[in-house]
Length: 355
Ligand SMILES: *Cc1c(COP(=O)(O)O)cnc(C)c1O
Picture (cartoon, protein in one colour):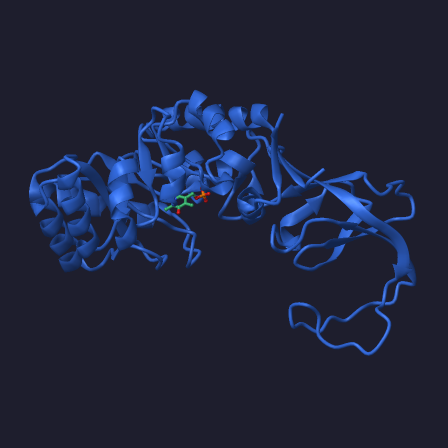
């Protein structure tokens, strides 16, 4: 069998329903489920849809297109490229934006397609990825002025992203400041902002600690939903399942070999010089999956008698303890993390199964 990523749909549904319930308790009535970590695999999306999120959100327009037949509004998370404007208007009901030139282009295209497209303005609260800087009022108002003149766009809300580039944690301080910006925009233009989008899975801790300002009505859950872990410190969240995806890979070679390479040692396939500890002979297995599909440090073997000792683009080398009774053709199972899930979901060399 090919290496296979197995989705445990019951566990995923449990997480989706638990987070929907949590959102209801906190008046997050614009809850978004983020589908990018599993490439918006439709079997998984259909399970998530059962929990009735208010939006399906993704950073890739191709994924939104894939989900277009599902009757839940679509939110584009990554600010659009000028080259994808037509499809943004076609497949996204709402997009996050920070650039006037892009919004002008969206407006032109929305006019062509006879649509009103909703925009959430990204505000950068200090994490320094996308958004207008929170302390640059002139830039915020200039952008709002511009946006409000575009007849085929609607200023629908504001959004912030944290714990990504800069690792800045959401706190009641920076989120209250964010809410204050929303209120100033509402007052200045006499409008109502429908969405105050306060962040991703890393906002979980302050949400359950009741430190999230009550005006925030949207969070965008990806990692929490799919892996049951919270991004700020990768802690398992107790009410959620962490047993949602498994990678299965078959042993293609199983041999006793020395632990130190033999010969004059240069650089490995990735230009690195590796130092080997001499542990004598060891039982080693190779599985047919490599860096092209997933990084070794994103994989966690379920059998603790097995550990990963190395990887090339197409192979992963495992050390098995003497007590292991595996044979060529047997399956080794792994858990993975967020980036691992993303890479495995993207790889055409990895089959997908659903349990
Ligand atoms: C990826 C992404 C999310 C989801 O983040 P998680 O940490 O997986 O919850 C939310 N918002 C934006 C803008 C994103 O790019």
